[in-house]
Image (tube, rainbow, N blue to C red; front, side, top):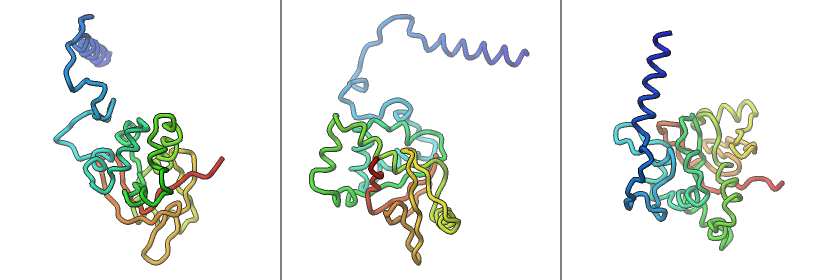
Length: 190
């Protein structure tokens, strides 16, 4: 009972300390609406912990289109959740292989919902590295995505494909796994 009271008291102190007292805080350039810093939990900077999926993607020259799409769809928070999460991350070349104008169209504000659906089709709850994907394939299982789709895993020799996209490499992050893929995995038409 005393422990619960201490926890509640500590939480109240924390909330009180965070209260601005109704005074408006001066704005600075880091709060500018035009700032490209991720929003919410995605904006937390921690120089001690291992990088999460979003941080790794943001540091990759091969995933600038993916990062721009994630920001346009405003789904950064999905990639920083505690996980575990697996992301099938198309390279810039994979986006370039889409029909001309597709990426530019998807990045338009009016297509934000469609873009978010396509991107969440590249994320799956759980940890699926290459070996896990091979096991899923052997068992005849499909990978369930955050978009509600099922992706077939196929193993042919040393190649592993997920939803028709070949896995080029795997990166372990603090909140899950990134599987770099050579194609954009488009959801089935509904």
